Amino acid sequence: MKAPSVLLINPWIADFAAYDLWAKPLGLLYVGKFLRSYGYEFQLIDLTDRLRWNNSDPATKLSGRGKYHKTIIPKPEAVTHVPRRFGLYGATREQFLSALQNIDPPKAILLTSHMSYWYPGVAETVKILRESFPAAKIILGGIYASLFPEHARKIVQPDHLITGYGEKQTLMLLDTIHEIERDYSAIPEFDDTGILPWDLYTKINAVAIMSSRGCPLHCDYCATPYLNPRFLQRAPEDVISEIVCLYEQFGIRQFAFYDDALFINKKRHIIPILKGLLKHGVNAKFHTPNGLFAREIDPELAALMKRAGFQTIRISLESIIPKWQKASTDKVSTDHFELALNNLENAGYKRSDIEAYLIMGLPGQRYSDIEKSIRYVADLGAVSRLASYSPIPHTAHWNRAKALGSVWDDMDPLLTNNTLYPCATDDFPVEKFLELRQLSNDLNMSVRKQPLKEDN
Image (tube, rainbow, N blue to C red; front, side, top):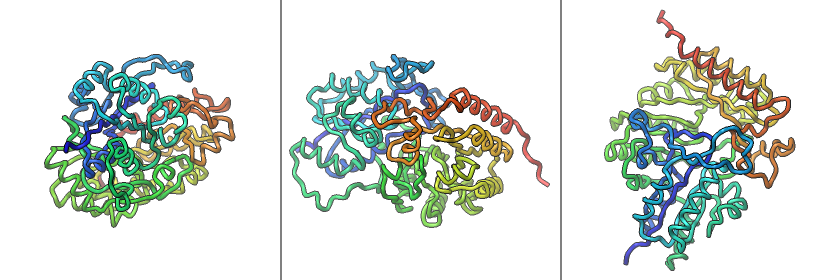
């Protein structure tokens, strides 16, 4: 009997700007891996796969990150006031249609979703899928589907919508569609072990890795505890095996850790992982687009990071103002940050290669709060990277923004786009946020031009 086949789709990004930082649809791939273990076969169309659609230049092909191709489309009504061009990022419409022509009509299509304000890309993807495969059942999951389920049902109109962990839910739904019966009593909700189905990509030069699911902290602006109620770390041996396999069999030399709390329980997790990779002779570059916890970067870990090939290091500082540090669960202080910088510098890193995430645009945050933090980072010789706040349902700051009138329950998710500075006020207008961005850019440029310190 032929195994049932399912089509996996990673949709377009729809936004004013987008840049690929080694991103891959990890949630969708985890669902695919899970389904494969229960007898399903599938094909993948990743509309943001720059290598497949030939929209990456030689330099970014080597680094694994770079610019997406942008197709300009009319701005949705909710954001017509924004003086920027709106577009779909990834494959062209013609490339998508051509890829669909090579696929046998599936009974079911699994579609993921990412940033909630990217939903026009999801809707446009579904529109084309409906035209190409009118009989297929479209199943939508992912972040947007979980945070704005009613909006997704109304706008995207999938046949089925899945919120939260999608692995077992999707298996049961697909079994119903394909008229398959099985005992679900011993089947786990999900399984994070093993290697993701990277063989679905015809070309691949960089891989995103998740060594854990969730985060033990509960920052006021973050929805991770809602989306991932449990914090679970994979066994170090399992992570090592995955990376070694990708290194040896796929020739991957660029890895990006997408954990929310990579360094938690470091002596039982990241330290054994790095030691294991060194033991296996893995000579690769590792990147951390998500922020690292400064308090965990001691001399031992800093030295291991350098030896293992950590290249892109971004530390979650968020703010030097105590009020906003508390909003970040007090995960970092200025003392922690300065000690981490010293340890990384002693391990062989230049301070100007270390970036500090600073959050701006929180409800009630002042211009001076952000300015002080930017100047503090520059004074220490590091680089500031401003992360604009996006209001997210099911977080404490959503409720605060709601009390200030910046968000409301039935608002269009497009208005939560962080590039719009949703919590801007008359006292702290958008122009001031742009001024802070310019300050950060100017100081970063000065930091990078500073000569290296001479050894005594």
